[in-house]
Image (tube, rainbow, N blue to C red):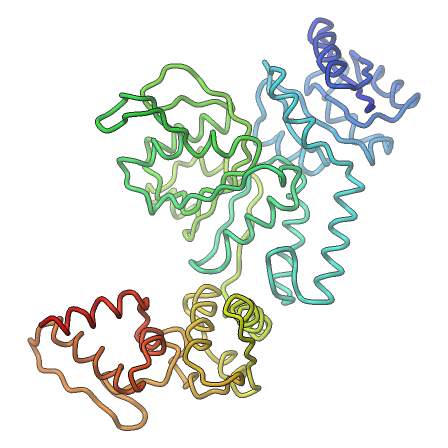
Length: 457
């Protein structure tokens, strides 16, 4: 049975909270002032403190500044409105979560379901740091470079809290992987992690997808639909490319972050949600605000804790480790292990990788398919080629290092050029379709469809 200290100056609210805690199997004591709270702490260290922000003799957060009796205690802030300043201060002081007034039993149950002693979280982080030194992995992330170590420390700092996070960085730099690592280190790890790319959803559908809709709310709405906020209840919602969200929807997102409630499309009934939001963008937030792509008030609400993901050319020492990681992962899926020879690793490291980690991963996938045997040398890694097709230019390219060329005339239809390139590449690889598709950068299904079309003509 856990023990809770409820620090609340309103006696009716305090008694209600104590009754709710008792129903959940906790013993509970109350304190109406900071002085009373310190006295209770001296008598018995609680497992959980529900701490009102405003007290007669000071701010609730003052209790965290002058005592070491809460080192292994979960602290949940009880407040009517969690401001950005309060969020930042609470993060620094180690507050685990928020309970927004007026709250109900479901909100409290959600908090209790996520209880983890700070010592347990610290032990997990120490294990992750040890694993980083052994294998170069930190959760889902790979790399030991100084810039990545800084990212890991930021993640370790923010994962155990409830504050919103804004991850910035170039496309392909690993923003979603960072968000998933935060989730897996958080108290919400056993609840859903849902990722939505705001730029990949039609502007006409994005509100329905995020907030849901009622049956009959618009043409084609033949049933009630639960949006991402409801489906991620209790967990984490990752909003990728949040600056692509329409401005009118950004207002509704801001309201959810401030009140913890929203309304489905076609409804007038608020729905309460218990979701941690992590957002990401490949734009500079202040520039996105200046260009009208992001509301300034939403930026401040999202940017409570900013994390910048470095581009791959900022961390070249991580390229060999990443490439080996991707190659081993592909080998496990395909059932055939392959390895890079030193010449291949050298060629990979020299390349700039404009598409970042995603670019490298895709190139390794192509290289795996195209390379004969289990040893991969630099045959498919000529200068300037990795990341485009990942191979030596075949016959059918505009120019190749072995002198093979394909001449096209100005004004020639693109369909004819495509046909010539595909057939020439297929011939170059002795009609090996998997390698042909990999060299052209298309799926095997697309290649089969094109060849079928050509055979029918």
